[in-house]
Length: 370
Picture (tube, rainbow, N blue to C red):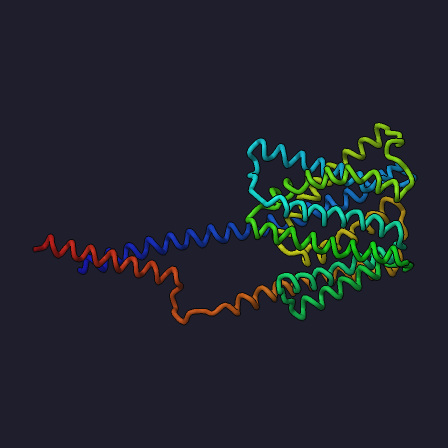
């Protein structure tokens, strides 16, 4: 019997077993990744809805009348920065190098987005404010196409349109706008869209994780918001935060809001880093549906047939979007050229290595036989 052939057969069987083990590990990793994706979206939805409910109680006149939204956002990023510092100090996360000018530029865009959103809500009607938020989806699509040359399939465009219409039906009521309000809304939409696109691009550019990036930008945002926040809030409400009378319950809700904001910020960076800014905007409107439902259940908000039909349409649009993204992924996978060989590249490499090893063994056996 040819000993070289036996050696080659044993080597190839061993390599096939290794390959099967690798495939099993890869499948387990993909399954774990899917669970992580669901966890990231779940954490974002729960924390976002929770912080809206907490802030509604904290800031409403029937609650604790803490109407300092920009300063409160500064508190949120301060808590996030503290968590990031503790994580880096304990070695839980790794601090990677990112140019300071990139961090400053990103923080300016993000803080401008926050301030412009607050001014837009103050100067415009709730209906126009909701329309401006809905416009972020097509704006993000256009900006990603301009900045990164990203193309979208017909199915994705259709799903985006369905989501926009559905959320619009269930949220938009009276629409009133003025020149100042329109300018603030325009700045808010552009800055928010650019910020969300930048989160993903910075992670890819510097190979940095979502939490590591957040831990670097949060201190800059916290410092700047706590500096200018009280002045912005005074312009919006004509009230000074220094004159606010704190109670134990109000302080407790501030702490709760900051705690939820940490999870909200982390999950936002996770979701955009794993998916895209467009996916975050589209699927993020699930939070709008949840807020409307909880408002009806907890705060006796009015729920009409128009609201219900809009929410159903929005959910249908999100389902269509998920389906469209999967179709797009499959189409991209099919577009990759396939080799005509019945063996994969890895199998061919293993076979080649096995033949080379068997040749060496045959030569050694020949020397022994001589």
